[in-house]
Image (cartoon, rainbow, N blue to C red; front, side, top):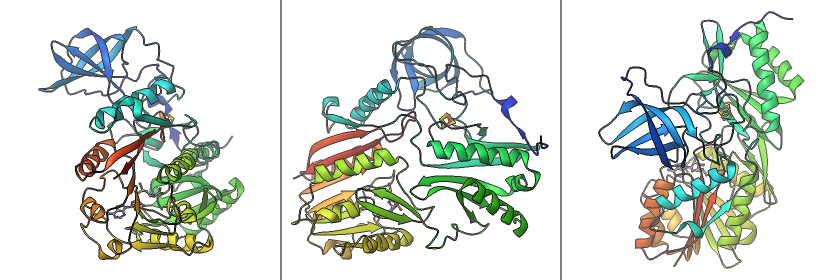
Length: 454
Ligand SMILES: C[S@@+](CC[C@H](N)C(=O)[O-])C[C@H]1O[C@@H](n2cnc3c(N)ncnc32)[C@H](O)[C@@H]1O
Ligand code: SF4
């Protein structure tokens, strides 16, 4: 057996636990251990209880449970407590499938059945959208609860000759070194294990670990790719050896050198994924939806709800490389995609061309600006928008001036969606449909789709 170049930090990990005992605050004085009856669940997976009229958040506790916990942090309005024991477990409690769950910040709900995760997400979403819909109005779109993630950014560091490769811990910047991650797609899991083993055991290949800022794994129609983001120089000889490793593993290897904004990737080596009838090309660091199966369902649902026809001129705002734009253009008279990143606008244009969609064009524009005359001159009938977490409040006044009949809002942040929905309701739009899309099972994240019409 070859000499191990680094040691893994396995010993530093706490033993596998059925609880998620997070939120340690060693500098805070500990309160007494006391009983709690857990009444609710935050969207981050913390149990909500009351003690002496004060709200207490208990990481890892579930609604309906009787637990003992110790207050570790006290604020004026609420306390945070560490779960000590579960006296009466919830019927929805399950043993987390991942051995890193107790420490890793990547997942928040593995101790809850997936059905109940979805129910909890729906309830939480309705709480955010209370002016918009009831829980019964919320349709659920869901797919596999594990092995769904086609993209991951791995944190890496070498500390005292110990290799840390994994994700940040919950609420900390510390890297939790992992042996595998079961929410990744099967091919990404295989690549992760092979990569970690070579970094640990091969003195030549492993020597780049200390010069890596992070590692990105990606899987799509072209297979798996690994992107190394370098923070220091790596000799050509070592890079050649890594290329040989990549060939042997049947993965594409990309390098992002220190000082570069992103990896220099030729057109030929670009990535590709399938949506609807289309193959979309993109740079490995462009945005794509991380859950391929859910993306297919989301796009299909969006087409059903927005029902594009040959009379429609549709704006696809925050369009990326054309994930919704191409399926829309297949059905509508004309589609214009708007995106701030020039590189993605170019990718979108090229995707329209190679898929023979002459009714689809792309515009580079920053949609945090209140107006944009290029966009307002199209005679728009419908709009689809899919902004980042910050939402689209700056652009909404310009959007409503276009007077679209229908607006389909896809959101990854329910709080900004609620704010933006209120604005649209004030402008006499009505909510016709709501979907909660479980795009990121086991985690605190969810995606929402709202159809407005006037
Ligand atoms: C959630 S992604 C959605 C992309 C695309 N709809 C998809 O499904 O793949 C949000 C997109 O908005 C773009 N974006 C972020 N800020 C923007 C802005 N101020 N103006 C226009 N586009 C922006 C991002 O580059 C990203 O492509
Ligand atoms: S993100 Fe991966 S490693 Fe972390 S808890 Fe979830 S499945 Fe485990």
